[in-house]
Length: 296
Image (cartoon, rainbow, N blue to C red; front, side):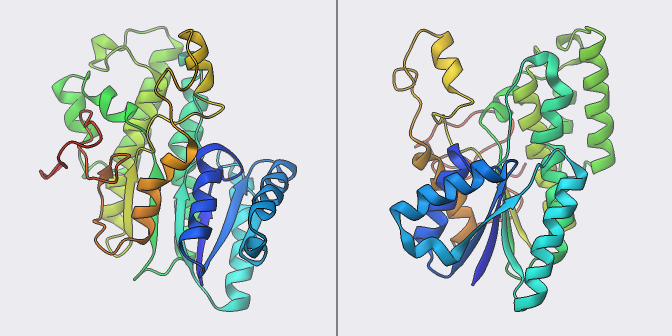
């Protein structure tokens, strides 16, 4: 039985990933990470209405990735069950993410970057180091952001040699710059959109994690432009329906994550497009175009 933790698994892309995992491999068990137990249980019950065979293969796990105590308590639950049945954790899908106003950069980084770091560092000791996989759900906004940066900042954000301490220092500087009303473009950081910045850093963190844990298959991917609670306001602001804005159903967003979880040909320390093809992290690659083959 492959045990897989999906953060932010109670709605949107996360919920679609949970469902697709359960449908793809009957030998899987999913911990559905959810900040709210009630919302998590409601989502679980909706899944069971569609397929009652999932009943013994899914558990709602209270988990707020932005809170150290919550992550520790979630770890204790999973650790206890791994000890009881003698089975290790196979996979982690770091899906939880937020999109806020640029003024909320610190809050966005706490979820979109620190959340990946907290959960991964805490749960990796429970993983099967020979077979384990981690999938970080980032966004095409990351490479698009990097493409607007100066050469110096691009070099920093695409390097696998960057340590977590260096990333943390970089984030602190960005937060201070935002709080002081500084000019991100003068620092070589484009116009400083916090969502794109956070996803670019999450991709860099993925490279760092892959280097630290070479036996695990650790990769990042974009799910694509998906209709969720987070993206619907964008369509509304544009005066369009989600469909008119080009947003797709959450089920489409499962293609790359599920591929990275289960396919034998998956690489290590890479970023993939929504079409499950390897992509650059310093510029956007359109789905359906040839995969990226160079080194990062």
